[in-house]
Length: 95
View 1 (cartoon, rainbow, N blue to C red):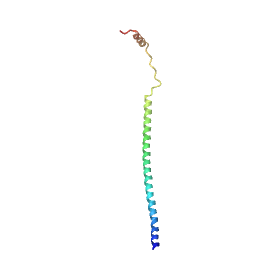
View 2: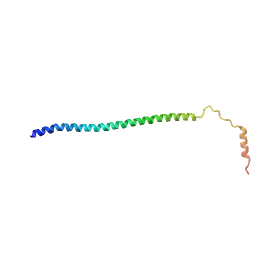
View 3: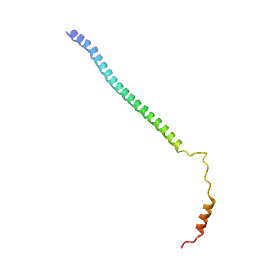
View 4: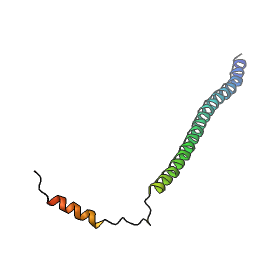
């Protein structure tokens, strides 16, 4: 009788080990799959951020180029008559 019970337990043990291994494998698959999907989302967000930064950089370059002073501008010549008038006004005493 002892041999009958031992043989039943021995066939049940590999089934339990298989179920435990399957359960551990499913738990590992869940966490790996979850991490992978989060990583894919983060990569998509970083690519969108990179695209926006490239657009901002291009916009800033265009803005800087449009506000850049012309190098071939001729400086205005100061009218000597206006300067003489300014000097005369400074000499007049205020009352």
